[in-house]
Image 1 (cartoon, rainbow, N blue to C red):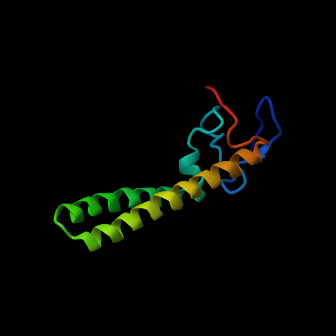
Image 2: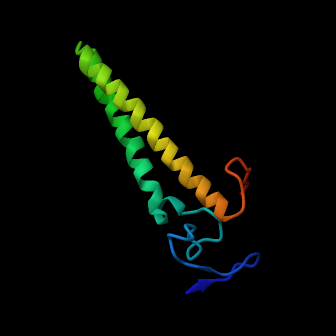
Length: 107
């Protein structure tokens, strides 16, 4: 099944090659986070980083300096790596469109 937009070539509805959800919306990137499974490891790492931040604050509050240090390092690593993965995937999607990561978009 292919979708022929008014301003571009036909694209197959395959989430690996075409992460946009053209079957349900006319906007370019609506639903992309759900249909593009390559973003999920980054989102999971970001969520884990936020959870580890909470655990680190609890450990620091109870006076466990060692655990607070380990949790702080794990929190920073999860957040940085998760954000990096999401940005790399975003850059890949933009490259498929022939755009740069910093190109402005409007709705």
